[in-house]
Length: 120
Image 1 (tube, one colour):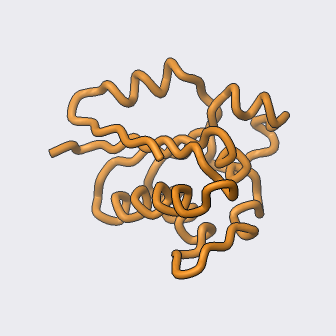
Image 2: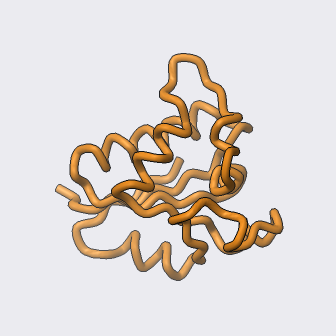
């Protein structure tokens, strides 16, 4: 069984169910003691900004701010470098605890021993 989970979420408000699934799986894994690294790419990049998760609404889904907080508490949250640049998001703009990193770091994490990678 994988001891680490690397999750890349590519959707945001444009595909709310897929976005919510990624955050939910990450939060449940963190709560289960799994080492989690959640990557925000594409439209999910906006959720690296303070207050943006509060605007997310999906009926019958856990509130995105709560999921985000639980992931930040015990997991790692990364914003894709290129996605940030395309949206003019800088390190000064993001929520405390969010790092900005690129594909090389993602590949390194996703291919590490005892790691399972998921893409939503």
